[in-house]
Amino acid sequence: MDAMGEQLTISQVSERTGVATSALRYYEDLELISSTRTEGNQRRFERSVIRTVSVIKAAQEVGLTLAQIADALSSLPEGRTPTKEDWSRLASGWRDELDHRIRELTALRDDLGDCIGCGCLSLRSCSLFNPDDRMAESGTGARFIAGEPRPTP
Ligand code: FES
Image (cartoon, rainbow, N blue to C red; front, side):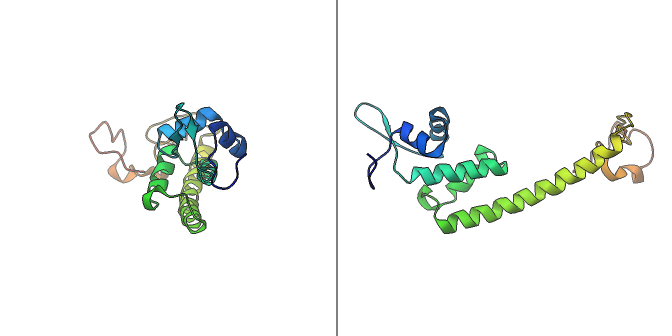
């Protein structure tokens, strides 16, 4: 039915990848994948789309947005199907992104720990709004109301 070189219907791609046909159509709308149309206007996909969809699924597991995935895939020459080397390079970049998010979430968890049992929700002293009390050197009181710029995270 799908010998090498034969194109796949959207249902076949869905069966092979476990991705719903509606999601595949959405991926196509976002130009993450592409298809040709039969005379009857039905989609036909190259078999290589399975690999591209696998990369999309893996990236989503990592927590990347579809926009980030589209950006990564567009970095491939002429939108080619990711090769083993492409996948290795993309995964390496995503691991760095994941490491960064883990550090941010760990810091957020620690800040939230200060809130447990507190309940002040003070814009001046709550760890969530003012980690490391970054505005303390500017003096006491409501510094933001005084017109000072908010610190960048
Ligand atoms: S609620 Fe008091 S430190 Fe966050």
